[in-house]
Image 1 (tube, one colour):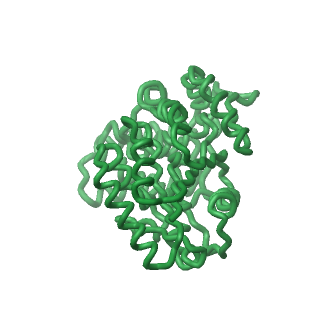
Image 2 (cartoon, rainbow, N blue to C red; image 1 turned 90 degrees about the horizontal axis):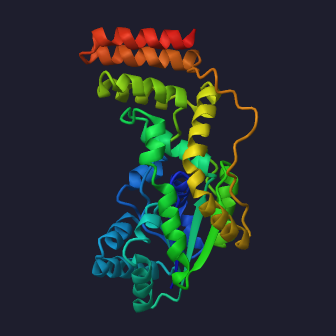
Image 3 (cartoon, helix red, strand yellow; image 1 turned 45 degrees about the vertical axis):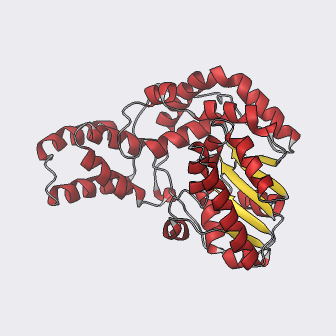
Amino acid sequence: MELFVHFGLYKTGSSFLQTTCARNRPYLLSNSIYFQESFREKDMLAGKISPGNGNNLSKYLRRNEIDQVLKTLNDWIKKAESLSCSKILISDESLIHAFVVDDALKKFHDCTIRLGIKSVSCFGLFRDPIDHCLSTFKHRAKKGQIPSFEYWVNNEYETMQRVREFLFVYDSVPFKWFFRKYHKNSELIFQYFFYDWLNCSFYKNRNDIWVNPSLTLSEITIIQQAGLIDLRLSQYLYSFFHNIPPDQKEKDISIENRYKIIAFSALSKYRDLFEFLNHVLENMGSETLHFELDSGFDTHNETIQLNTIQINAFFYAIKHASKLHVRIADSLKSIIRKVIIFLK
């Protein structure tokens, strides 16, 4: 039996790949690949964000519950064999965090030896640091509970430290490692994952898969301001903004440029890490990461940018909240005035 482990990184298309796998199980089986169902299978099939099918494995490794790791892997081996599959595919973006905890990676390797797994191949995507930082912030700030990007990136953004810890231990086990640079082009990610790594040739379900599309920074700024008044209003705003297709939103260049400068300053202390990671990527035949600010940034006019569709969504959210008796009517006048000032 061969084991294929997609370990992350988060915000690099993991949910897209998991949804693709879940929707195309017959094609995976035709390539002798067993992809275990997730406890959130419905989310995966629906194209919603999900933890993948390796969440329990990651949890057991972090807790040092090795007996549970062995049991989980053994159950999957039996299921794979019953379907005449010679390969098992695991995908969970939290595994990169699990591998760095208390020799978990070495313990995981020991488990595969005990179970007679003849080879383990691991796949990971790494994203340009500033781009990853902004994307992660958009994901975590979308409910209005993070008041400041500058505070968050300097105090709560943990990704670079996890990557450093991972690069310190990954080659301590004889796994086959396959790292690539993340691209927003889903076809390229598909090629890396299925053709280059899994050596799997099948026809992908060509329906567009949009998994957890990000809000714009302007929308998040509005949600943050609303959160200072009532977090319930933030939830309504998130719901309405989230339902707008990405290609129908206004680009918010001015806020993005400002945040890029803040991120560049905060992440500069990891420059040695980026250089080492690029060395590893280059040796694996991958493109390297970019960590520089583009010239010509205009940060003097930081304004919220919304189009008519987004403005309508904003007021519909307020109307909806009021109908459901969210008691913020008086406070809404303040936020509406601020939005109108930003829009002028």
